[in-house]
Length: 299
Image (tube, rainbow, N blue to C red; front, top):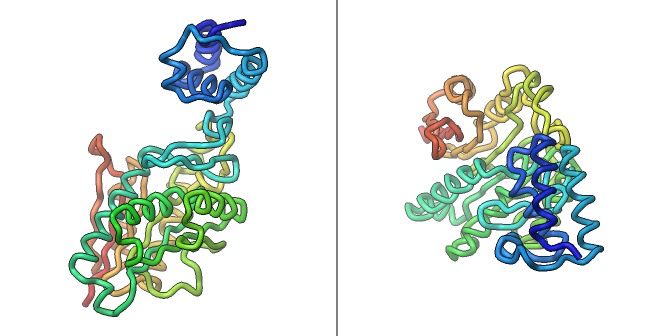
């Protein structure tokens, strides 16, 4: 019977030869899945024996990964903002860089609650996550607000143009006890029947079409509609920006994830679509543009 260490070594080499950027991490995660433990258990016990069934399942998963299938799809889950989400080919895999969008949304909500925005109307703050995919942004936000004991002060909706993505997002909301809290619906951008929103969030497709064509790797397995943003990557974002005056409150804010090279272009698009708005680019931890913040003027 082979041990964890004996199975890992050739798997790492197989994945390295296949072009994986993180062959050891991939192999450890897949072996953890096969033996029913976590990655820490794999690292800590290289001498532990692995039964033939688990070894065979691991070998099959390694071949799937070598063929380019994302680890998240093979495992059926992805950690995002400290939360595990069911993940499969129905939606884009949540990326670490998108966690900044959740953090910015949390800050926005807490500031508005502190200054009484929403309470003036005797209503809850209204938030919509557009292009929700797995539901990761809306659900992670709701989890943080629940932890902060302010979830009752907000109303969270999420939408996606893909029926498959909506189904997956609802599954994730149910898994975290939020199906009755986060309203997830099929819609192109903001749902037509939604009231004016205080906060619009979106991680829409922003990769230029020509770039999507040559990305390879995980992108070959993810829905193209979740990646392809048109010739310059901003087609869908521009469509959402154009709707903001009609779907947000007078002092409403939109937080939209963008590509690292789209800061200036996205800001110009926002100023053109929402005259008089305050436009700001929020950088990621490396200092690169990551989130476009657009705040309507209350005047």
